[in-house]
Structure formats: C-alpha cells, structure tokens
Length: 110
Image (cartoon, rainbow, N blue to C red; front, side, top):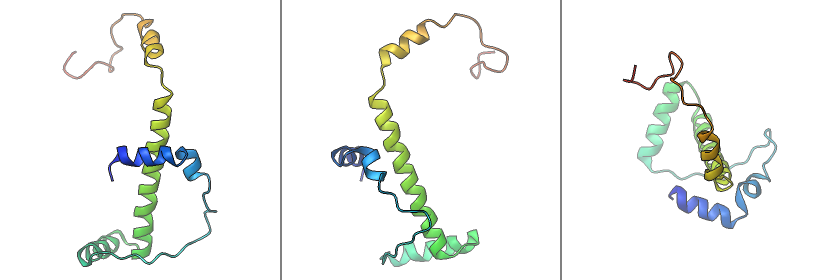
C-alpha cells in the first residue's frame, strides 16, 4: 500500500488521533499467527541470530518500528494540512540579508 492510499484510509477512519487513541497498555501482549513465505522466515531467523535476539523479539521490533513510522508520517501529514505557506514565506521575507556565519555556508560556496 502506498503512503497516499494509507493517508486516504487514515483520514476516512478519523485521522491519526482516532487510529492511535486506543493504544493498549505497553505491558499487555497479544498473539497473532503469522504466515510468512519460507524464504522470508529464513532471512528473518538469520537476521535475528546476527542481531543476537530471538525471532519473536526481532519481528516484534520490526513491527513496532513500522507502526511508529506510519504514526509519525500520519502526524506530519496532519500538521502539513494545517500549514500556511504564505505566512511562512512572509516570516522568511523578514529575515535580514547577511552572509551566513562561519560553518553555516552551503557546500561549495565558501
């Protein structure tokens, strides 16, 4: 699923606040029978071993990272919808014209 389709579905479901409002307590656990292609399972087992973690912990971490990523993207999109580009440009227009401080130059311009 593309991020645009995810965002559309997220907006239809009430947005990120609604989606993540019913977070379970962090110490509660759920079980889910996960079916994976054999080659994916073999790679996951190998990577878990290389990282020194159990397969369960490895997969839990991957899922948690992806959930966090989707939550962050959803939050950013909500904030971006509230943005006022004209107001931001007006603020930037008030900045004085002066050379950057030492170390703040763009690469290749000093």
